[in-house]
Image 1 (cartoon, rainbow, N blue to C red):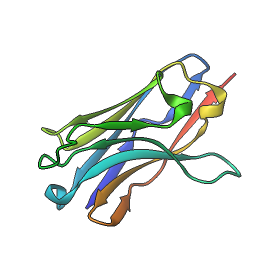
Image 2 (image 1 turned 120 degrees about the vertical axis):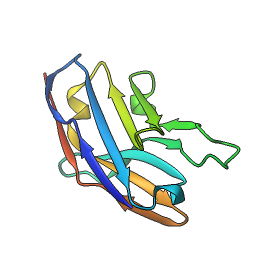
Image 3 (image 1 turned 90 degrees about the vertical axis):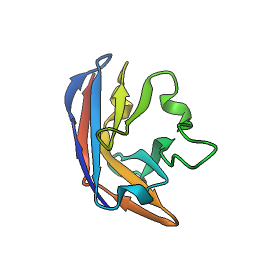
Image 4 (image 1 turned 60 degrees about the vertical axis):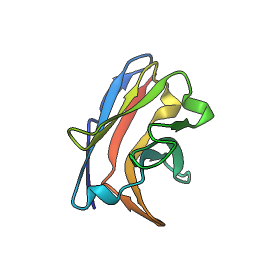
Amino acid sequence: VQLQASGGGLVQAGGSLRLSCAASGSIFTIKAMGWHRQAPGKQRELVATVITDGGSTNYGSTNYADSVKGRFTIVRDNTKNTVYLQMNSLKPDDTAVYYCSALVRFTTYWGQGTLVTVSS
């Protein structure tokens, strides 16, 4: 599984950005996809996930970190094998490198990071 992330950039506080993560390779094996982020000097943390396995009873279920609930939305487009992270009402604390991920059985694949900088 290969993941290609894009969409980061510089935005003012209160603004919006949309990140994209395109999956390729053995995409039929992916159970869930998500976004994590790592701010300078901090550990990588979960931002949002979505179940993409069509055979799962939880297909389409989403999960968000408390810090982004109500502001971020994770959306999957199965026709494009892409997951998006719509980020609204951005805050300076959202500044981080964002990584997309794909869960295949018990292995997590990572895309390259994309930097999001929110200025105050």
